[in-house]
Amino acid sequence: MPNNASPIARLLVTLAAFTIIVAGLKMADTLIVPFILAVFIAMVVAPLVSWLRGRGVPNSLAILVVVLLMLSVGFLLGAVMGSALANFRQDLPEYSSKLGALSSGFQQWLTERGIVVSAEQWQNSFDPGALMALVANTLASFGNVMTDGMMILLTVIFILAENTGFAEKLTRARGPKSSSQWLETFTKSVNSYMVIKTSISLITGLVIFIWLSILGVDYAVLWGLLTFLLNFVPAVGSVIAAVPAVLLAIIQLGFGSAALALAGFVVVNMVMGNVIEPRWMGRGLNLSPLVVFVSLVLWGWVLGPVGMLLSIPLTIMLKIGLESQAETRWIGTMLGAAEMPLD
Image: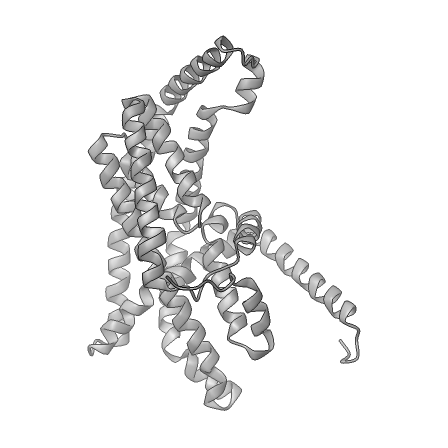
């Protein structure tokens, strides 16, 4: 575009390019989703590779050790989660039937107190059985993504192998060493965010699993995994993760145990989200609430359930990348939350 082009023309060209890129991502989601997962997995394990290399372990051996560790964890989780999900699907009709009976009972209770709602309208407005089925299908969809595990694993290996010399190649390609400083800043910031967020999500899911197991809620391992995954989605993620576990606690154990289960979710998420996470991560990577909502909708539409879970990390990567360049730093600043005084 000519340098003397009007601001409106530049804006229209930018919006057109953005639309084309988003449409391309949407059409190629089956290829892009495994690659994005591989990138994020590589970011999480890259510090471990660097730690091993710093202690004299050759790069190839360090990558091999990390890959073997990933395979061990993956096979263990796959076996446990696959069995639990299969059993949950078998029990789903029974749970849906019990939820339907509770729902009908609540409708009758409202009718007795003068709040009349037709059975058809109530069924269309509130169907807890459909919610449980949605949870099962969502967990199954992540399992389907992991069927590309071999391609994801190979991609992770190549990313880790390429990571060693990429900065040097960029320096040779772009000239002065200072030209690659933005890449180093970007990589360190994103790696730090991913490691901290994954650690916090893992601890949150583990605590929820232990608490639900103590209460005796069925399939506590599934709800722990769901909590781990949805913890990447701020605010609404923890609420969504609590709903199926609390509903199942109502069916299985009654309202008293369900209240305890809900209290566990509230306490854990308040402590981890309002105390631990700000201490570990700081406030520098915060996003505007509007940006969080828009990114959740946009990435979810483009990449499906995986896009919703990775919406915030993807937006964080975009924000850090924009802030690393002087020309686009103002856009990254606009994506951030307003400055708040520290307590």
